[in-house]
Length: 207
Image (tube, rainbow, N blue to C red):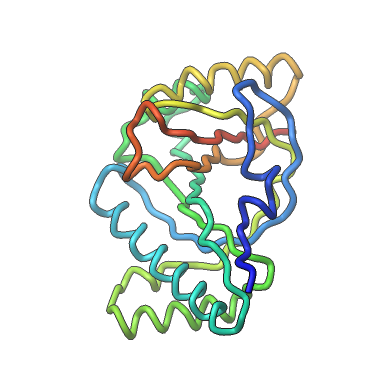
């Protein structure tokens, strides 16, 4: 039985260069959970645990059916209250908005054969077996990101403003406008990888 690896099946989705580029992202489906707060805090860690618990429950259910897959890379959509912090550039926002006020939708991409019904079954299984109440906040989320500017960021998250500045200059040069939420794909496991070795795709939907 061949295991499906989404990073290979959707190589373009999980690949970026160290220079800004314009790409088009097709529709995809995700497990997701939302929240507000510092991503280094306990609440965020607890939500990650809930998300991964359901992701692996789905994986093992399909493995039993002969359709095994590798749990995909973690991703996040990030935003803030733009009425409270108006006219901040992409690079400024990550520095000037307090981390306690960051809004996030943390996600794991699912194979195309996973349905909302199967996600609901997995949520109930995890709730029954592990009593992780946060799984009740998990949703089956579908997104068509479309035209986007992206760039690979290498190094600590704290240095992302440097990469975002290059992306912003690219967007302005090509007379584009932001058209969605800031998107990050964590190619490295930030729980186990040294900050200087982290590799993160930064993506901004545009029009």
